[in-house]
Length: 269
Length: 269
Image 1 (cartoon, rainbow over the protein chains, first blue to last red):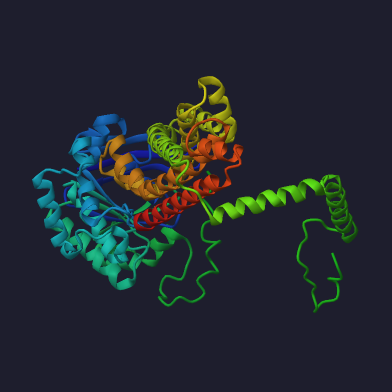
Image 2: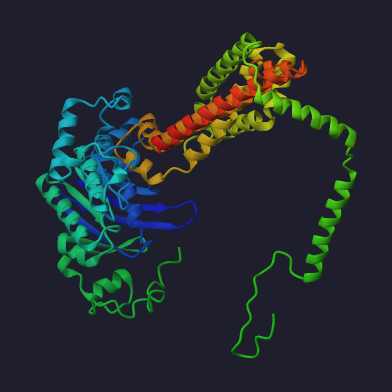
C-alpha cells in the first residue's frame, strides 16, 4: 500500500538526512521507526506527506507517486495521510471541536471552513471520534485548556477525521508521562486495528515500541540498519542502531559516558 | 589574567564593558563635563518665566472653573470631527494594514512581496504624525480630510508592522499540522495563522483606536481639524476656561478608550 523506494533527502546545508531508504507497508501494517536523534526519522515521515520535499526516490501510496505531486493533487493526497505530532501541534486557541474538524479541511471549500459550516456528516464523525477517544465532555473547550494526554487524544481524533489510509505518528509520547504514554500508544494501535490503518510510528522509547509495535525499523544516519520483528531487537541490533551501550542493564547508570563515542562513523556526509 | 598559578583561591570579577579603570573614569568624566556645558548653554529668561507662571496660574484656575457652555457648539463640532476621523481612519487603516501585514511576514509571503510590504511599512512609519499632517494640510487644505489621511497612514504603519511581527512569531508546528490535513493556503491562513494572532490583532486595534483619538487632538493644532483645532482656537484667544473644558473632555474620552481597550485585550487573550 505504501512503497518507499530509494528515498534520498539532502538539505540545503548539504546534510544527507536520508541515504536511499526503501521500505514497504501493507494495508493495516504498523511499524515502529527507531533510531538516534538526527538519524532522519522525522525527515522520513515528513517526506511521505511532503511537509519536507525529498531530493530523489519515489513514494507510492496505492498507485499515486507522492513525490511527483503539487498543488491540488498534493492536497488531495494529504487527505489520505493523517499525522500525529510530538507536541500535539493543536491550534491552541481553537476549540477541541474546531481542531478535530480541521481534519476535514481538505474536503471542504474555503468559505465553508471560514464560517465553520462543515457538512453534517463531518460534524457527526467528529462527535463520534471524540466519543471514541473519551473527550465528549470537552467539545467546546479551548485546546490549551486540556492536559497533555487529552491534547494528544484531540490530535489523534483530528488525524482520524481525515478518514486516512495511512497514519504518520511523530514521537507521540515524547511529552507524556509513562502511564499516559502507554494509554496513547494503546489507543493508536487499537484504532489502527479497528480501521485497518497502516501506520509509521517514530518513537524514542524502545521498550514502548517493543510492547506495542510488531514490526520495527531501525534507522541510523539516514540508512535502514534493521527491519524485522520487535522480538528481534537483540543487544547486537540495538548497538547497530544506536551505537555501543550496555543494553542488558535497564537502570539508568553510567548513561552519559558513551554517548559521544557511540556515533563515530557514518556522520560525516 | 590574575594569579591563577596559585592553586586554590581563584578570583572572579564581573566582566566589564570597558576594561581598564582609567578609561572608564575618563568616559564618565567626559559625560559629566558635556552635561554641565550643555546645561550652561540653555538660556533662561527669568522675566519670561515669571510671566509664564502667571499664565500657568490662570490656566490652572481655568481648570477649577471650566466653561463648557460659551463655546459648546464649537466643542461639539470638534468632538464629532475627531471621533469621525478616529473611527474612519482606523477602519480604513485596518483594511489596508491587513494585507500589507500579511505580505510583510517572512514565513507567509514570498521574498519579493515581503520586500515591497516592508518598504511600504517603513515609509508609513518614517515621519511623525504632525509632520505628515502638515504635509497633508498643505496638499488638501485645512480640515478633517487631512487628519483622516494622516491617521490612516499612521494606522497602516503601526498595525501592519506589529501584525507582521506577530505572524512571524507564530508556532510553526500548528501551521505544519493544518497543512498536513490537506488544507489549502487560505484555510491554513485561517485556521493556523489567524487563529494564533487574532487576539493580539484585536487588542492592537483597540489600542490604536485609543492612540488615534489622542493624535486627532494633536494634529488638529496644525490645522487638520477636530477637537485639536477647537483647543488651539481657544488658547489663541486666551479663553483658558474653554480650553480647560476641552482638555477635561479629552482626558475623559482618552481614559474611557484606555479602559475599553484594556478590557477588550484582557477578555480576548
